[in-house]
Length: 205
Image (tube, rainbow, N blue to C red; front, side):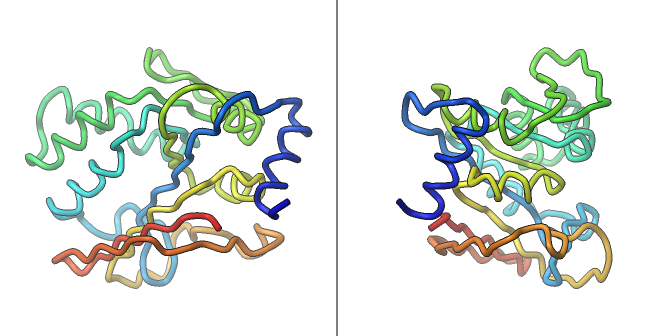
């Protein structure tokens, strides 16, 4: 049995779940600086890049957030979608993004958003359960949850957009020592943007 397959199998046993149908794909998407930081303020995305991010949501019917990223994205983008207050590309992104159902992992957050469901604990168990349910792709947008979800073998693909900037501070993609072993990836697509950004699409091996 392959190492990553074994992780999923073990996770099913640990969390008391069994695989009854084909797993949904879980995708992680993030902006990152050349020196490995995920600071949302490091750059202003071009129209071309906004359209790329809109395209990454093709086939996605669920967003999986941590609290910090959720509060960064909402209600900002839902307001843009409602008011059409952005550029043409930003409005397209906002409409697609805000229309997708979402799950937020948080012990403290309260929300009356009918499209948002809050989970209080056990993010890996919750994501595994969602992977086993019928549906389309799940997009994870959380740096804080990433080590736990990788360690549980739950992330299937990575869409990383590298920005041509060195920031020297902020939240790193992964803290030192947060993973106990390497995660081997296969590069399947590279897109170069006029702004100098590069989008890298990796699949878990």
